[in-house]
Image 1 (tube, rainbow, N blue to C red):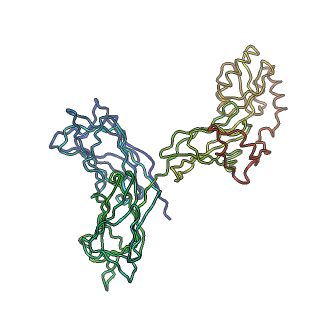
Image 2 (spheres, rainbow, N blue to C red):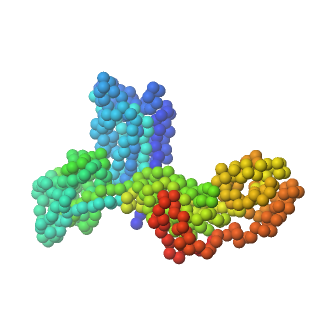
Image 3 (cartoon, helix red, strand yellow):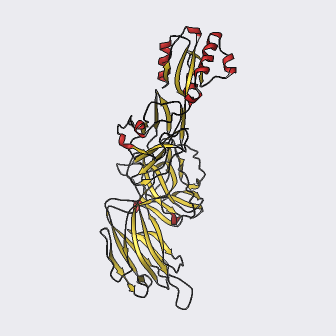
Length: 505
């Protein structure tokens, strides 16, 4: 199976007089499309009867469905908005006289079907109707390759003489279709014959149409010629498609979400007028689509004895799942069930060692990819106070706690023992109350840099700090791990990974 190389999210920002293209999206040509200082965006500067357009080049490594976002707003004259725009994708028309009728910037999302696009350069032509009387201002255009997945699907089977409609997909009109008993399939034989389906949607949804069909050669020849068209509510989705495949096979076509509506939607399959052979079909179906959510960055920190992971809302996600590891990313201690929160604090007080997490977003029951694993390393840390005992230890401890460092001991006014992450050690070194901070055992060179009264403390620290104490304790059980519930206060989100609990680093 060929792996699709989806283009990452990227776009052109129009809040500047000199917008820059990206690796996959550029604007090489335009007419009467220019920057407006007053609007801080680009607009079509045309009057009635004149044309304005902008050509965008979308370069793809392979064919794929593409999500496109337009950030735009309309201006008004005498409380009237009249600035409809049109968008063509190669030879297909995605938008026809689209007019959002909003005077505030908003994001408008559209989907470009993959079968409209080619590997290489594709042209997106944005233009404005020549009868406009008001302006439309653009703040940005962005694109991203997407891979929608089926959420709910339905189909009608044509392998018997009597086909059966479903609750939401039915046949409402036809001309010239018939059953072929030798193939146990239905067929469209004559040019311009058609079959019209009605698909009911509770609300506008992203859908994919599918058909299992084959081409038929001219009797006595190998030539196949049965191109067909598919329209959705009058919009041309597929034009003269003819794969020349004699075996029954499945094909799928993404439908732009702006073409469908709540309620009944008409889908018509028509044999093109130039066809000379028969189109046989066994199934026709539709499936609502969900986009797998996109991952984002994750932060993992130590905060006064607790390991906390946080992440922003990930695009399309409804819930999240966490892998929690100790001692390395290849040894998960547990995997959470899915939950809707944007942070989690892990069970038990933190110990010296390495902790790692990764997050998987879910869109309902559709899983997104795991994020990269993020790691934090905790060490027993010794911090030496400045000015040979003149610093108030209580104030110094307070400073450390504000950084999230766990203070273990403060037996004199010369040093403090603590548990800190590598980043916290770096931050502590910047505090005026401390002259030095070291994670773990000090080297001989580090000890020589200390004042005489601190050298002895460092030597004792090295001698009494067991090497094993820097390793992860291996006597934990799943019950131990679940003692402290995560911050959403539900221990039920913890799901054990069999055989992983309590393994040493």
